[in-house]
Image 1 (cartoon, rainbow, N blue to C red):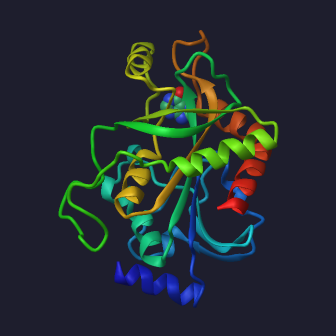
Image 2 (cartoon, rainbow, N blue to C red):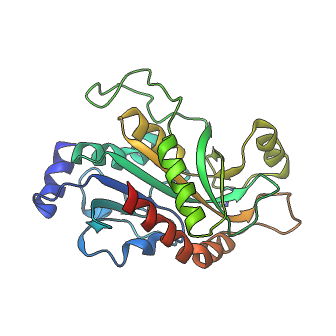
Amino acid sequence: MQDTIEYITAKIKDFKPELGIILGSGLGDFADNVDGVRVKYQDIPGFEKSTVAGHKGQLVFGRVEGKNAVIMQGRYHYYEGYHISRIVYPVKVMKKLGVKTLIITNAAGSVNKKYTAGDLMVIKDHINLMGVNPLIGENDSSLGDRFPDMSEIYKKSLIDKTLDKAKELHMPVWKGVYAAMSGPSYETPAEINMLRIMGADAVGMSTVPEALVANYCGMEVLGISCITNSAAGVHPSRLSHAEVVETAAKVKESFKKLLVSVIREI
Ligand code: HPA
């Protein structure tokens, strides 16, 4: 961790990020217009290379709507084969750099039958079905407790602010529960049925490890899902990553608008 922080601080000098943003599939170009320092994951000691098509793999440090931000342009997924502790390592680094609020975005399939592709959903809570917890292992008590509370991972005030902004922008935005599966295979129709019975509204393969660790570290978290497809079995069509990226690309302008107006307010 010391090597990581030293490497990054040598690049960003006395820039102190207070806001962290993790960009999901197809949404990475939010960071393209941010003026600032770009640091490739592959060059950072302690970081892994990101491998998914549609993900860039760099940290972008710069001002976003008057806030000092660090943006993850591309993230690590458990299905890439990394140890779960590597997936959440950047969140711990953000904490050490001074980040207080973390906005996490992702692409997700709709479990709730009222949702359709192209909708946005603010995450009110999650269900961890990845089969692993990112805090397993020795606890670093400088970051958080051994048995951390998870009763409000997604900060209510941030959820309300986002819904208010969405209303002002006349954008319909859902509020729902995100279930995380390990992937990389999409779910079966029976699994989607199970998720619906459990109370999930959307399903994806990310976000939960990062949100869990951010909450453990004492950060405030906001999660927003871009519903890119109906989950398996809702419609007869087959699921594909191309469809996920395509829908995310269609929605990204309104997604950006919402993000910007939320960031202005926090
Ligand atoms: N399932 C899991 N992850 C996803 C999906 C899905 O349907 N869509 C985008 N990410």
